[in-house]
Length: 172
Length: 194
Image: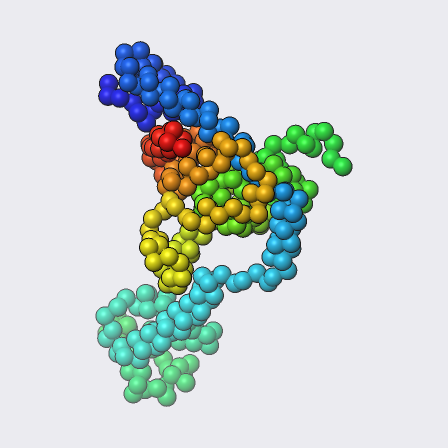
């Protein structure tokens, strides 16, 4: 076993147990250098403990009076708003605005032959649409056959437009 | 006036009461911890005025955040974590200040962790003189790194285990033991030289 230097203080303080404690004891019984170091450390630990206890301290009553004043002053101060909370609010607003702009741009730029799944389009659109726009979704079978830019006036009269005929119906 | 049972409440119970804004419980915790907290902060920062301020700030944080103590660790471990973090913040600000407003000596090195000349000057607290042993120890502690000082103080003043010291210093248990070992070996040498 190599010299267990870092383990000597935990050993002296009674922190070690089981196999580790036994192995340190075994090493100490054989190694004079570690025994000497262990004795020196034990002496210093006692010296430090008594030194800490005798360290000068301030008078505690003025210390506590000062603490009470500081605490009272802190409680009177309005709680500063955390930076991340401020950022969260503005960040959310900015993100919502950006999402609306992107969605609008996508809606206008995509023609009736858009590549994305209509269901995904509807879900994304539903997040930002007002309840009047939801009527458009109800009439989606009609809308998807319209060129929005060319037939914009038709949208206002969707109720009057007949739904597109399926192939089966046309054939019959 | 509190009854005899009131005086024997555990730290953890007093902390729970402090969380409910029981000022008496808070005052009891302060009285119980003020010497240890002050000595630990003063030792880590090597400065009495800073140690006083930071230890008081730790008590204020305790009052404000006692509800966050979940009882998984000992109260002392949890509270010293607050204190040590405040000391680290203080040192960081101090470094920035020394680096950007170099009013001190030209050879001041903010990255030198151990020696702070402010500790050499006797503060008003020193009017209450400690023993010669304490004076020598205080002097010797300034030659250790802040982590070594913290490890020595927490283990020998508060009887924290290596695992608890590791928890407070946010390091492994092995590292905590190394800090303590090196600190005590250095103190052995310094106290012999003195």
